[in-house]
Length: 137
Image 1 (cartoon, rainbow, N blue to C red):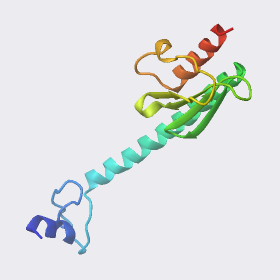
Image 2: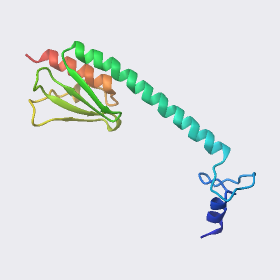
Image 3: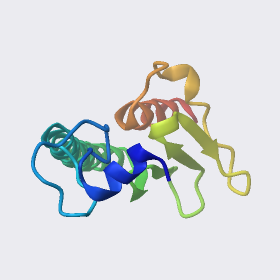
Image 4: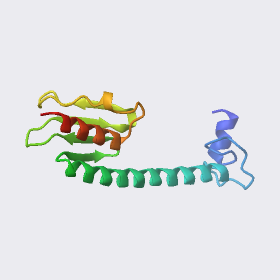
């Protein structure tokens, strides 16, 4: 290996950013204080994001139920909204990459994209689905 790789492995250089660590290395790779702080703030940011997503989902769930729709959360990246009835329409929702997919094996789902902003969030989808369902006879 190269000299820099050896210094990282021995713990003299940060394994994340490559900066010099002043304290003596213990012969194992380490990270500097700045990278530790960055990792801690990223962890806190992710926890806050999950908490916000959970709170938003609970709000959207109540909103959908009140309109006779069913909203299901599979994980932070995948949701589904069902139309009324046992075999109502179904739309798969992926907020992370802004994708909506209706299930072709179910009744035709309303077109929601025209009713939402380009940078939509889960609540926009639920609101658009409720508005579309109210317009259908």
